[in-house]
Image 1 (cartoon, rainbow, N blue to C red):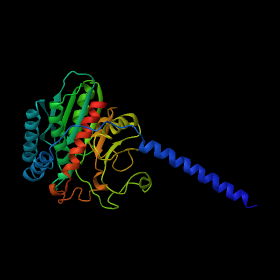
Image 2 (tube, rainbow, N blue to C red):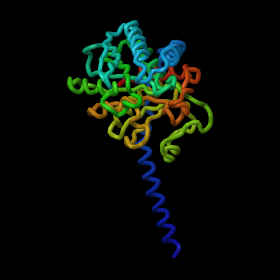
Image 3 (cartoon, one colour):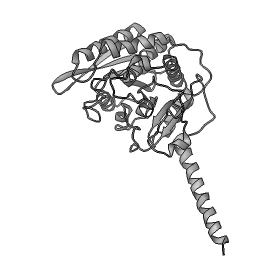
Image 4 (tube, one colour):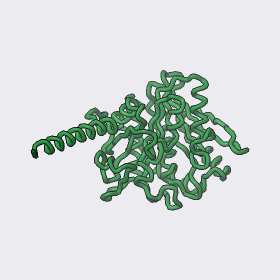
Length: 323
Protein backbone atom coordinates (compact mmCIF):
# COMPACT_ATOMS: atom_id res chain seq x y z
CA UNK A 1 0.00 0.00 0.00
CA UNK A 2 2.98 2.32 0.61
CA UNK A 3 4.60 1.73 -2.77
CA UNK A 4 2.12 3.87 -4.71
CA UNK A 5 2.67 7.14 -2.74
CA UNK A 6 6.44 6.63 -2.99
CA UNK A 7 6.21 6.09 -6.73
CA UNK A 8 4.00 9.16 -7.10
CA UNK A 9 6.46 11.25 -5.13
CA UNK A 10 9.30 9.96 -7.29
CA UNK A 11 7.43 10.84 -10.48
CA UNK A 12 6.66 14.34 -9.23
CA UNK A 13 10.29 14.85 -8.25
CA UNK A 14 11.42 13.62 -11.65
CA UNK A 15 9.07 15.98 -13.48
CA UNK A 16 10.17 18.92 -11.34
CA UNK A 17 13.82 18.01 -11.89
CA UNK A 18 13.40 17.83 -15.67
CA UNK A 19 11.47 21.13 -15.66
CA UNK A 20 14.25 22.78 -13.65
CA UNK A 21 16.88 21.55 -16.10
CA UNK A 22 14.87 22.86 -19.05
CA UNK A 23 14.48 26.26 -17.37
CA UNK A 24 18.22 26.31 -16.65
CA UNK A 25 19.05 25.51 -20.27
CA UNK A 26 16.67 28.16 -21.60
CA UNK A 27 17.61 30.98 -19.23
CA UNK A 28 21.37 30.53 -18.84
CA UNK A 29 22.32 28.95 -22.20
CA UNK A 30 25.28 26.99 -20.76
CA UNK A 31 28.08 26.43 -23.26
CA UNK A 32 31.68 25.29 -23.38
CA UNK A 33 32.27 27.46 -26.44
CA UNK A 34 34.45 30.48 -25.78
CA UNK A 35 36.76 32.96 -27.45
CA UNK A 36 40.55 32.96 -27.47
CA UNK A 37 42.37 35.01 -24.83
CA UNK A 38 42.68 38.57 -26.12
CA UNK A 39 45.98 40.39 -26.59
CA UNK A 40 44.25 43.79 -26.47
CA UNK A 41 44.82 46.28 -23.66
CA UNK A 42 42.73 49.15 -22.32
CA UNK A 43 44.10 51.88 -20.03
CA UNK A 44 42.27 51.66 -16.69
CA UNK A 45 43.47 55.17 -15.80
CA UNK A 46 41.75 56.50 -18.92
CA UNK A 47 38.51 54.79 -17.88
CA UNK A 48 38.79 56.35 -14.44
CA UNK A 49 39.40 59.82 -15.89
CA UNK A 50 36.27 59.54 -18.07
CA UNK A 51 34.15 58.43 -15.11
CA UNK A 52 35.49 61.21 -12.89
CA UNK A 53 34.95 63.80 -15.61
CA UNK A 54 31.29 62.87 -16.01
CA UNK A 55 30.47 62.16 -12.37
CA UNK A 56 32.37 65.09 -10.81
CA UNK A 57 33.06 67.86 -13.34
CA UNK A 58 29.72 67.50 -15.14
CA UNK A 59 27.64 66.83 -12.04
CA UNK A 60 24.65 66.66 -12.04
CA UNK A 61 23.62 65.21 -15.41
CA UNK A 62 19.86 64.89 -15.06
CA UNK A 63 17.37 66.08 -17.68
CA UNK A 64 17.09 69.54 -16.12
CA UNK A 65 20.83 70.26 -16.30
CA UNK A 66 21.07 71.04 -19.99
CA UNK A 67 24.41 72.86 -19.66
CA UNK A 68 26.09 69.85 -18.05
CA UNK A 69 24.49 67.47 -20.52
CA UNK A 70 25.83 69.58 -23.39
CA UNK A 71 29.30 69.64 -21.80
CA UNK A 72 29.13 65.85 -21.52
CA UNK A 73 28.07 65.51 -25.15
CA UNK A 74 30.95 67.78 -26.24
CA UNK A 75 33.42 65.71 -24.18
CA UNK A 76 32.24 62.47 -25.80
CA UNK A 77 32.30 64.07 -29.26
CA UNK A 78 35.89 65.20 -28.68
CA UNK A 79 37.03 61.68 -27.82
CA UNK A 80 35.13 60.07 -30.68
CA UNK A 81 36.80 62.51 -33.10
CA UNK A 82 40.18 62.03 -31.44
CA UNK A 83 39.79 58.30 -32.00
CA UNK A 84 39.35 58.96 -35.72
CA UNK A 85 35.64 58.29 -36.06
CA UNK A 86 33.19 60.26 -38.17
CA UNK A 87 30.93 61.99 -35.63
CA UNK A 88 27.31 63.04 -35.98
CA UNK A 89 25.01 64.83 -33.54
CA UNK A 90 21.38 63.71 -33.50
CA UNK A 91 19.32 66.55 -32.04
CA UNK A 92 15.80 65.97 -30.75
CA UNK A 93 13.30 67.92 -28.66
CA UNK A 94 11.64 67.01 -25.36
CA UNK A 95 9.55 69.33 -23.20
CA UNK A 96 10.66 72.36 -25.19
CA UNK A 97 14.39 71.64 -24.86
CA UNK A 98 16.87 70.26 -27.39
CA UNK A 99 18.89 67.19 -26.40
CA UNK A 100 21.70 65.36 -28.19
CA UNK A 101 22.72 61.86 -29.10
CA UNK A 102 26.42 61.67 -30.04
CA UNK A 103 27.15 59.14 -32.80
CA UNK A 104 30.52 57.80 -33.93
CA UNK A 105 30.64 55.90 -37.22
CA UNK A 106 33.50 53.55 -38.13
CA UNK A 107 33.83 51.32 -41.19
CA UNK A 108 30.90 52.94 -42.98
CA UNK A 109 29.38 50.71 -45.65
CA UNK A 110 31.07 47.50 -44.45
CA UNK A 111 28.22 45.02 -44.17
CA UNK A 112 25.50 44.71 -41.53
CA UNK A 113 25.70 47.48 -38.95
CA UNK A 114 26.45 46.75 -35.30
CA UNK A 115 25.41 49.37 -32.76
CA UNK A 116 26.95 49.83 -29.31
CA UNK A 117 25.40 52.41 -27.04
CA UNK A 118 25.45 53.87 -23.53
CA UNK A 119 23.43 56.65 -21.92
CA UNK A 120 25.29 59.63 -20.49
CA UNK A 121 22.54 61.21 -18.40
CA UNK A 122 22.08 60.32 -14.73
CA UNK A 123 19.16 60.20 -12.33
CA UNK A 124 18.33 63.15 -10.11
CA UNK A 125 21.23 64.27 -7.94
CA UNK A 126 23.17 61.02 -8.13
CA UNK A 127 26.75 61.33 -9.37
CA UNK A 128 26.01 58.44 -11.71
CA UNK A 129 29.50 56.94 -11.72
CA UNK A 130 28.37 53.39 -12.34
CA UNK A 131 25.02 54.51 -13.78
CA UNK A 132 26.15 55.28 -16.36
CA UNK A 133 29.48 57.09 -16.59
CA UNK A 134 31.01 53.60 -16.53
CA UNK A 135 29.17 52.64 -19.72
CA UNK A 136 30.17 55.89 -21.45
CA UNK A 137 33.81 55.42 -20.42
CA UNK A 138 33.68 51.94 -21.93
CA UNK A 139 32.11 53.33 -25.11
CA UNK A 140 34.87 55.94 -25.50
CA UNK A 141 37.67 53.43 -25.00
CA UNK A 142 35.92 51.04 -27.38
CA UNK A 143 36.12 53.81 -30.00
CA UNK A 144 39.89 53.99 -29.55
CA UNK A 145 40.21 50.20 -29.83
CA UNK A 146 38.06 50.02 -32.97
CA UNK A 147 39.96 52.87 -34.63
CA UNK A 148 43.31 51.24 -33.90
CA UNK A 149 42.18 47.70 -34.74
CA UNK A 150 39.35 48.02 -37.31
CA UNK A 151 36.95 45.13 -37.75
CA UNK A 152 35.29 44.22 -41.03
CA UNK A 153 31.83 45.70 -40.45
CA UNK A 154 30.16 49.06 -39.96
CA UNK A 155 30.06 50.14 -36.34
CA UNK A 156 27.90 52.87 -34.85
CA UNK A 157 28.77 53.94 -31.30
CA UNK A 158 25.98 56.00 -29.77
CA UNK A 159 25.98 58.03 -26.54
CA UNK A 160 22.34 58.61 -25.63
CA UNK A 161 20.64 61.04 -23.33
CA UNK A 162 17.28 60.92 -21.50
CA UNK A 163 17.45 57.26 -20.51
CA UNK A 164 16.55 58.11 -16.92
CA UNK A 165 13.16 59.18 -15.47
CA UNK A 166 11.00 61.03 -16.25
CA UNK A 167 11.64 59.97 -19.87
CA UNK A 168 12.36 56.29 -19.31
CA UNK A 169 10.04 54.09 -21.41
CA UNK A 170 8.88 57.06 -23.51
CA UNK A 171 9.48 58.08 -27.12
CA UNK A 172 11.76 60.86 -25.81
CA UNK A 173 14.53 58.49 -24.76
CA UNK A 174 17.59 59.12 -26.91
CA UNK A 175 17.78 55.44 -27.76
CA UNK A 176 14.15 55.40 -28.90
CA UNK A 177 14.87 58.35 -31.18
CA UNK A 178 17.89 56.54 -32.62
CA UNK A 179 16.17 53.15 -33.01
CA UNK A 180 13.17 54.78 -34.68
CA UNK A 181 15.48 56.48 -37.19
CA UNK A 182 17.20 53.17 -38.00
CA UNK A 183 13.79 51.61 -38.57
CA UNK A 184 12.46 54.42 -40.75
CA UNK A 185 15.58 54.26 -42.92
CA UNK A 186 15.22 50.45 -43.24
CA UNK A 187 18.81 50.02 -42.17
CA UNK A 188 20.07 46.45 -41.92
CA UNK A 189 21.16 45.99 -38.30
CA UNK A 190 23.11 42.99 -37.05
CA UNK A 191 22.28 43.96 -33.50
CA UNK A 192 22.69 46.43 -30.66
CA UNK A 193 24.75 46.19 -27.46
CA UNK A 194 23.86 48.45 -24.53
CA UNK A 195 26.62 49.17 -22.00
CA UNK A 196 24.65 49.75 -18.80
CA UNK A 197 26.59 49.93 -15.52
CA UNK A 198 29.80 47.98 -16.12
CA UNK A 199 31.99 49.15 -13.23
CA UNK A 200 30.87 47.73 -9.90
CA UNK A 201 32.19 44.35 -8.74
CA UNK A 202 32.51 42.66 -5.36
CA UNK A 203 34.33 39.64 -3.96
CA UNK A 204 32.17 39.61 -0.83
CA UNK A 205 30.05 36.56 -0.01
CA UNK A 206 26.36 37.03 -0.90
CA UNK A 207 27.10 40.32 -2.66
CA UNK A 208 24.88 39.36 -5.61
CA UNK A 209 21.08 39.50 -5.54
CA UNK A 210 18.52 38.41 -8.15
CA UNK A 211 14.94 39.34 -9.06
CA UNK A 212 13.76 35.77 -8.39
CA UNK A 213 14.91 33.23 -5.75
CA UNK A 214 15.02 30.61 -8.52
CA UNK A 215 17.99 32.41 -10.10
CA UNK A 216 20.09 31.78 -7.00
CA UNK A 217 20.21 28.15 -8.13
CA UNK A 218 21.66 29.06 -11.52
CA UNK A 219 23.99 31.99 -10.83
CA UNK A 220 26.81 32.90 -8.38
CA UNK A 221 26.24 34.57 -5.01
CA UNK A 222 29.42 36.65 -5.42
CA UNK A 223 29.14 39.72 -7.67
CA UNK A 224 32.44 39.43 -9.53
CA UNK A 225 31.12 38.71 -13.04
CA UNK A 226 29.61 40.54 -16.01
CA UNK A 227 26.25 39.62 -17.53
CA UNK A 228 24.77 39.58 -21.04
CA UNK A 229 21.02 40.22 -20.78
CA UNK A 230 18.44 39.41 -23.43
CA UNK A 231 14.76 38.61 -23.78
CA UNK A 232 13.38 35.17 -24.62
CA UNK A 233 13.33 35.98 -28.35
CA UNK A 234 16.99 37.08 -28.31
CA UNK A 235 18.50 33.65 -27.60
CA UNK A 236 20.84 33.44 -30.60
CA UNK A 237 22.15 37.00 -30.39
CA UNK A 238 22.64 36.76 -26.62
CA UNK A 239 24.57 33.52 -26.97
CA UNK A 240 26.73 34.95 -29.76
CA UNK A 241 27.74 37.94 -27.61
CA UNK A 242 28.27 35.76 -24.54
CA UNK A 243 30.54 33.25 -26.30
CA UNK A 244 32.43 36.12 -27.93
CA UNK A 245 33.11 37.71 -24.53
CA UNK A 246 33.77 34.48 -22.66
CA UNK A 247 37.45 33.55 -22.55
CA UNK A 248 38.60 36.87 -24.02
CA UNK A 249 39.73 37.78 -20.48
CA UNK A 250 39.62 35.97 -17.15
CA UNK A 251 36.50 37.91 -16.11
CA UNK A 252 33.58 35.45 -15.70
CA UNK A 253 30.76 36.02 -18.21
CA UNK A 254 27.17 34.86 -17.66
CA UNK A 255 24.03 35.40 -19.67
CA UNK A 256 20.31 35.47 -18.97
CA UNK A 257 17.34 35.30 -21.30
CA UNK A 258 14.06 35.94 -19.54
CA UNK A 259 10.63 37.53 -20.03
CA UNK A 260 10.61 41.31 -20.13
CA UNK A 261 8.30 41.16 -17.10
CA UNK A 262 11.25 40.06 -14.96
CA UNK A 263 12.47 43.28 -13.29
CA UNK A 264 15.70 44.51 -14.89
CA UNK A 265 15.57 42.62 -18.17
CA UNK A 266 14.57 45.69 -20.20
CA UNK A 267 15.89 48.39 -17.86
CA UNK A 268 18.07 50.18 -20.42
CA UNK A 269 18.38 51.43 -23.97
CA UNK A 270 18.38 47.99 -25.61
CA UNK A 271 14.64 47.70 -24.95
CA UNK A 272 13.88 50.39 -27.52
CA UNK A 273 15.51 48.35 -30.29
CA UNK A 274 13.30 45.39 -29.35
CA UNK A 275 10.29 47.64 -30.07
CA UNK A 276 11.44 47.81 -33.70
CA UNK A 277 12.21 44.10 -34.02
CA UNK A 278 16.00 44.41 -33.78
CA UNK A 279 18.47 42.16 -31.98
CA UNK A 280 19.68 43.84 -28.79
CA UNK A 281 21.31 42.90 -25.49
CA UNK A 282 22.49 44.68 -22.37
CA UNK A 283 25.97 44.23 -20.87
CA UNK A 284 25.70 44.94 -17.15
CA UNK A 285 27.11 44.40 -13.68
CA UNK A 286 23.40 43.76 -12.82
CA UNK A 287 22.81 47.28 -11.44
CA UNK A 288 20.82 47.39 -8.18
CA UNK A 289 21.01 43.62 -7.76
CA UNK A 290 24.66 44.20 -6.81
CA UNK A 291 25.36 47.92 -6.55
CA UNK A 292 23.18 49.13 -3.69
CA UNK A 293 24.16 52.76 -4.31
CA UNK A 294 22.10 52.65 -7.52
CA UNK A 295 20.34 56.01 -8.03
CA UNK A 296 21.91 57.34 -4.83
CA UNK A 297 24.24 60.32 -4.37
CA UNK A 298 26.81 57.77 -3.19
CA UNK A 299 27.18 56.24 -6.69
CA UNK A 300 30.68 57.71 -6.92
CA UNK A 301 33.82 57.11 -8.98
CA UNK A 302 35.90 55.78 -6.09
CA UNK A 303 33.66 52.70 -5.73
CA UNK A 304 34.35 51.27 -9.18
CA UNK A 305 36.79 48.54 -10.22
CA UNK A 306 38.60 49.98 -13.24
CA UNK A 307 40.76 46.91 -13.80
CA UNK A 308 37.68 44.75 -14.25
CA UNK A 309 36.15 47.48 -16.42
CA UNK A 310 39.07 47.14 -18.84
CA UNK A 311 38.22 43.45 -19.15
CA UNK A 312 34.59 44.24 -19.96
CA UNK A 313 35.64 46.60 -22.77
CA UNK A 314 38.13 44.09 -24.17
CA UNK A 315 35.56 41.28 -24.01
CA UNK A 316 32.95 43.37 -25.83
CA UNK A 317 35.51 44.31 -28.49
CA UNK A 318 36.42 40.64 -29.05
CA UNK A 319 32.75 39.67 -29.25
CA UNK A 320 32.21 42.34 -31.90
CA UNK A 321 35.10 40.89 -33.91
CA UNK A 322 33.75 37.36 -33.67
CA UNK A 323 30.03 37.81 -34.24
